[in-house]
Length: 114
Image (cartoon, rainbow, N blue to C red):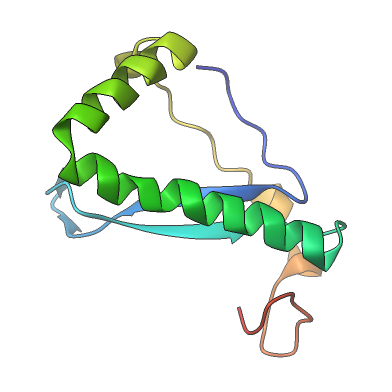
């Protein structure tokens, strides 16, 4: 898997492990959609990207409920991305989130409060 670079206008599906204590993870996670700023696309286009990401994110529930679908998805994933055991950690790019793009209660946003 190639290293990913986070860029402005990127919309990401984030899988965040929960109940992570003493270096052990029980397999539970939460999923949310996020975007990297500055957002230079139109509000309508950002909405389309976020809607698409939400549709993909909800598929995790289907994969948990349907073993046949999960097996098909795993096969397709391996065809496209290669062996899932070879996945690498993407480094955090802290310089992307400098003071200029910090959100607070007064930050203009698309779609409501962040």
